[in-house]
Length: 575
Image (cartoon, rainbow, N blue to C red; front, side):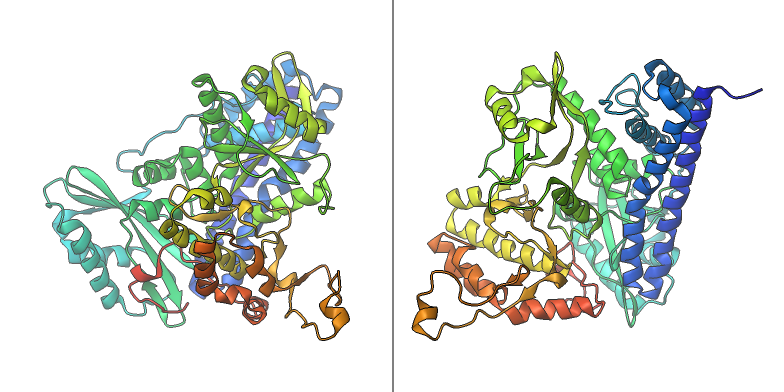
């Protein structure tokens, strides 16, 4: 008996998902091997390949579905049946929620110009977040009866990093002292005290992380143990209990972890107990399931709309020449649309701007670039959009707008975390606050450089501040690889004609950069400028930038530590 068309399509999508998740897991499982070999270039390449997997599999699958459906590719009743059949096929999967999102992606690439539709997709009624099973086999348990020394030793014995330790006894001593300092001086050990660690190791760049929690003082005390691999062997780099540091390690400004997630929802449940103020969609992003993170973000967005009344407005800050940005005051998100026409001197195309955002999505963000979600046919109730914003959108992005009786539909936009623009912060902050922030502004630029990113337009209006006052770059239209730039010393004028020339008398190529010119415009406030110029004098040296270029060109991966140097057990130790 031949299979019905709805079942055929559902099965095709189901098999496509199985291929995706198998390939995703295969990439993830390569990381421990590369870490053990100190093959940092392979780790970076593997991470990018995993990021590309989704679309690499999605587009041919959608094309195949479209061909099979022929003229019925926009048949709503048929898609409803396909969804029902698919729900049955995935019902026993441990990655059920990821499979639902995969279906949403396929239908949106197959059913032309379809908006987000709760009847056809897994939107609000999709698989919900679940907790951790009792005696989950994803967790290692350490009872307090073992004693602190034995627990620490057992932890380091239980996790295999594929290479010998540099000095295991010293690592054990460091960890015991860290626990005594933070936990044993504040809490009393009792019969309920116990420690748990996820069996999965979290890898990113040159580091591996153990994620755990200890039940003490009637509550869970979370911790993270960063592990590094030097030429002399494996070593424990530090022990982190600070919730702000842990939150930053899972930040929207950092690349996704490579971590085996046999049951993604359980991994996320454990992480949620460790970093409770992180939203669930942020945690799915952090472990590499950013497409499902996007689904959960959208659920949160719809829920917020139902429980708020304010209107969408033009975002604060200087209006950009490439992007129109708006926000909902009660929501910590901005919405960014590429303008129909760019004001001079911008001369790029809309597609080139999209390529810049794609570059950032695939690159190591080193805690200094904001992650984005890209949406097509995103809709907002018209009644919630202020008249001023409607006019601004019509003036600048009209080709991206579509109107229904009740909604404004955006053919393409990006969502990004809302931050206070750095230029606005520097207008009202005190001198001491400002000094700390401009120091971090310079650090952000140099850390991006070490990751082979040159921001291009480094004006303070293109940077924002997180709630922890960390400086983040968020305007990507002029971003370039650092190794493509030519850092030059500015020629000195010698003749009368050169001194008084209305235009530069020397040739300037498109990729030429004169770092000494940065001094003129980077910081305007007099009480901050002198401090900034002295603190970051390397920023204005072509030789310094050229030195970073040489390190990158030699194949060096410059590690960006997501915590302060001073808390490392062996400060200054190179990897």
